[in-house]
Length: 117
Image 1 (cartoon, rainbow, N blue to C red):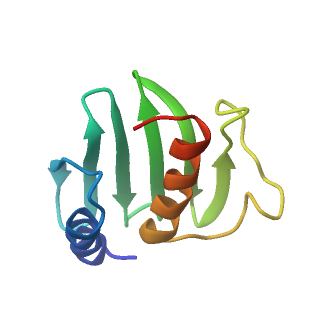
Image 2: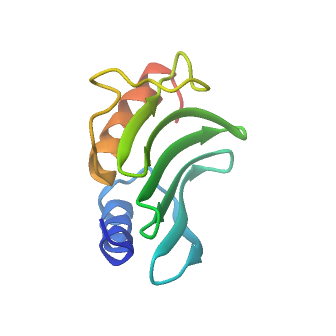
């Protein structure tokens, strides 16, 4: 996934998912992107992609704490579950490669489960 493709997907997702209030691009180069999709002041999805190191992080953050995430490090995926957000889930399901749209579908499920806006 290229930085340019991911940035395009971010713009598509904010336009199609009404619960996002804004998109902030915090850092961007030709090979690196760090952005946030805000749901509310203390609730957002942080997206990070570094093409050079083949690293991707999709993180749901609430009150400055990770509550759910999917990470790709050197091409290998793992998950941080809602029940154990500080641990790496390397099970078969945890290692599934996902794109941003799929992660945001998972975020919707997490938000409903935790009764967050």
